Image 1 (cartoon, rainbow, N blue to C red):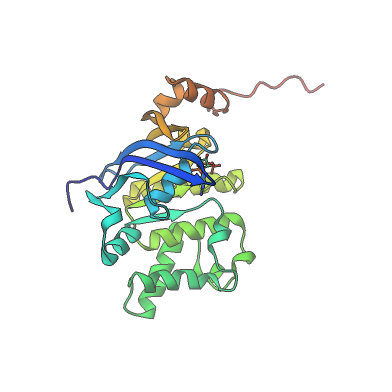
Image 2 (cartoon, rainbow, N blue to C red):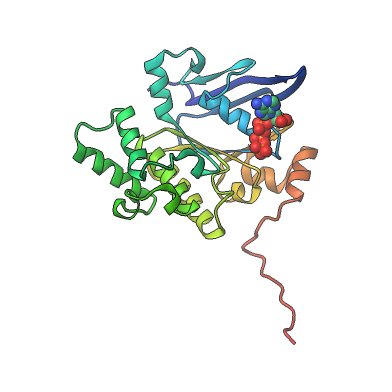
Length: 272
Ligand SMILES: Nc1ncnc2c1ncn2[C@@H]1O[C@H](COP(=O)(O)OP(=O)(O)OP(=O)(O)O)[C@@H](O)[C@H]1O
């Protein structure tokens, strides 16, 4: 294990050019995720602020116009095939719409079998089954309930938990979670956020939590970065930033979002 941070985004800039029009989606963004302890870092911003571009750059889905993504001090863009596979194992992703990542023709079992095979996680079928069951247990599921089903036979919340289990299967050090709870209902949202906290605390897995929803960030985030028009305009401890935003844009973003305060009771008027 090296002394370098787990992940470093160094002066990341991404300019899209389409039909002669230039859009700066990321403008000189820098960010460091420590190797230990595991943390949940929120990237928050409104639609179009550059959140997905940042996540795509970290996951290697898009190349930067300038700047670097460093994994344990090494530029991800220059890793050879084997090292890039290690990187893709250590840095997993879960997305807003878990339906989109499943092939509708395969049973859920296939998602897990494929991951075991691609990353050489097991030497026997029995070991593969054990690893899969273990991963499902972490998200409160059992193989018998889900593995023989097709994606459309499951709810959005179940599909999202399966994505978490698949990510966990690979024992990653970081999960990039792009709006993981925006399409699930409130009770499942709480469950999924709780799974994230447990993975951080019990398994040492860090999260880059990408969201426009500051109330969930408030519940689980350690550090927060507020992204505005491709730049980080404010960063710091999540509760400190949300309770006392300094940048004008953060103030605007935060004032538009209700934060539940457990100490404030609902005022109910007389019923008659
Ligand atoms: N492939 C592309 N080609 C051209 N412009 C793009 C492309 N992808 C994103 N953009 C532009 O880059 C900017 C940042 O987009 P991005 O998707 O990263 O924002 P976001 O914060 O993730 O938004 P959302 O919350 O709506 O997903 C936007 O102005 C967007 O229109």
